[in-house]
Structures are given as structure tokens and as C-alpha cells.
Length: 490
Image (cartoon, rainbow, N blue to C red; front, side, top):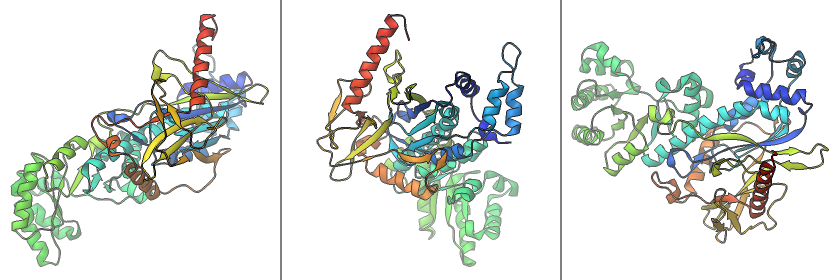
């Protein structure tokens, strides 16, 4: 059974049947995927999940077993929910859409399109839930990882949250996204196999408890796995555990090995790390690394770094892979233009709301990123590709939520457009991108942000706004829609 086609919400297919029954299924439309606010009260997000989303598009088909299930569904009147003709249409369905996307790993900001999907409205609609599911969670976790890695500085962060991740799929997605965001390794073997992510691990308390004696447990581990001699020292008492690890380390040296590291997983990590470092150094284990874990996140790691705790690496699990502090990205997928009935032009579409942040942006949207002469990003401009800026060095952007906030681009020296064609008529236009390249793009993009935007608390807002003519068109559409409401239309 092709599970991809049913990994969606019911209303995507009921709307699809509606388009089909009205003869609209082939009418071309444009949707864009974006988010409304930065997660974690931060200053940025890292676009992730795009490569998996493209895989979904390429492989989306309705097989016989999926169609049989859909045929079994009933409406409130007890009759089949989907007509035979529509199911026959789905049997021949191919997602013949064009997709433009920002490169995965790119730093992005609210209201900007991450994906732009153009094609028959039925196909665009069916893709909504699949694309949001792929991009929202991965972007959330990649962003969380970038924040944690930024707090850790030069110290590596190892992701080991599989046991507390949001199910098997969530565990895999989280490991991949965390690596894109900067994690150095994962404990997740399937993620290591699938994407070549380095894998790391120590042992659980059960190993020590099973032996009944910490000394015996460490010695047994050193004998069985001398090349993985990192000991979890807090089963009974952390500093006693460090001393027992040192004893095992001395035996390892007699056999030509060494004590690679110890892991602290509870207690006052700053104090314990300082005491452990002293014991290790006094015993001649100056190169033994101290790894800290225990529900770490960017705030705790910042505190440990500020205290100059002698910790060499951080193991981060639950608070990374669950997006602790912000349960979901506010990603949405909205119709922004539809082809006129005669097929000669695009008709912009806009969604109104009592909440300013929920008013959408009309058109076939693109994002232009400006940088100064030093290569630092200074602003993003959202514009309509059918009405691009007249001047390549366009001099102003308008805040999407506040037209009185305008930002001149006098400091911009160069620019590039972020969205590029990645899917043409349902097929990739190039080879899938490797996770290492995506990870490096994330690292490079973050380095080109002003530190005030990267800071964890009360970050500076990155200037991301509308090209002035798009802003004026949006205002005109809002005014027109409100006039029609007053006249009893819309």
C-alpha cells in the first residue's frame, strides 16, 4: 500500500472532489508555504524538511488499496463519500506541479515563501498536508538545534533524543533536522545509516546496575569495548564514579587503550564537571573528555558556558527532538493566485482576518536577499515574480504587518533570489541534495546573520518586508474585499 497518498487530511480530498465535480481540477493555481512567527521567540528559523517533501511529491500516487479504502468512506447521509468517477480520476493522478523552493538549510523569516507550488488546483490542494507535515516539524527542530549549537559555541552537541521523540517517524525526522541545524552526531543508528550522520553513544545506567558494582561494570565494559571507553558515572555518586572510571582507565592503558571520556547526567553539572576535571587531570587523564547531559537546552548550556564549566561536549535529547518550548511551527499553505477562466492572466487572491498577521500576501511570490559589502545579510524583500522590482537595487521594503515601518536598503551591495525551480511537472529538475551540503549551508547562513538576530533572548528583528508595489496591490485587494463585504458580497 502506498502510505504517502493517505498521509493527509480528509478535507484535502473532499476539496479535490469538489474541484473535480465543478470542472475546476485543471485550473492552474499558486500556493505558497510560509510561517507566521519565528519559533522559540527567536530571531530566525532554519528551513528544513524540503528534500523529504520533494520525495513525497515525486512518489505520490493512489494505488488500488488506497482507493478501496476511500471508496469505503461514507458521508453523513450514509452514501459513499467519494464518487466512482472521482476515484477513477485519482487512479490516474500524478502531481504534475512546478515547485520553487528555498535551498534546504537556508535561514528564513516570517511571511516569506519557503515553497511555491504552481499547477492544477486539484494537485496543489492534495499536496497541502503532506508538505506542511514534512516542513513544519523539521524546520522547528533544525531551528532548535541551531540555537542549542550556537549556545554551545565550539563544544559539539550530540543528539540522542530518539527514545523521547514523537514516534518513529518523528525520531528520524528530528535526527536529520538536528544534524542540519548543527548537531555533530546522533545516537540514532537508522539516521546514521540513511544519511551518513556520525553516530555516538555511551551506556545506560542498566549496564552498571546489572553488574551490581560500578568498578566491575566499568572494567567489564573496558574489556568488551575498549574502543568505546566513555563511562556514565552518576549511577550512584558522580565523583565516586569518576574515580572508578579512572581505575578502569589505568587498566585500559596497560592494554594500549585509554579512557576516552566520562558522562555526567545529573546534579550540578558546572560544579561536578569542575571537580571531575580536577580528578582526571591529577590522575594523568588530561585528554579524557567530559560530556554533560540531563535535559539540556540552549538556556542551560548558555549558563554552563558562562560559568566556564570544563565540559567538552553536550548530549541533548528531549528538549531538542521535541522542540521544547514551542510545540509547533506556525507554518501554513495558502492560495495566492489563480489563473483566469480564459487562461490569459493570473488573478491574485488574498485571505483577510481580524488578526493582521493572518492576512496573506497575493501573487506568485519570490524572496530577494540583500547583503552588505562584508557579506552580512541586511534585508529580505518579498515580491511578485510577475511584477519584479523595476530597479535591481530596489531601495525600500514595507513591513508586512505595519505599513508605517519601512526600511531603506542603502547598505545593500548584492542580492540573490532564494526560490529556485526544484520540481517541474512533478519531477525533480536535479539530483537530491546531500545532508552534508545542507548542513554547511545552514552553518554559512547563520554566520552571515548579525549576532543581534542570533541571540537567544530579545533578538533584533531581521528586516523582511514587501516590495512597495506588492504592498500597494495588497492594500488595494484588502480594500476591495472589504467593500464587497459591506455590499453583502464575498
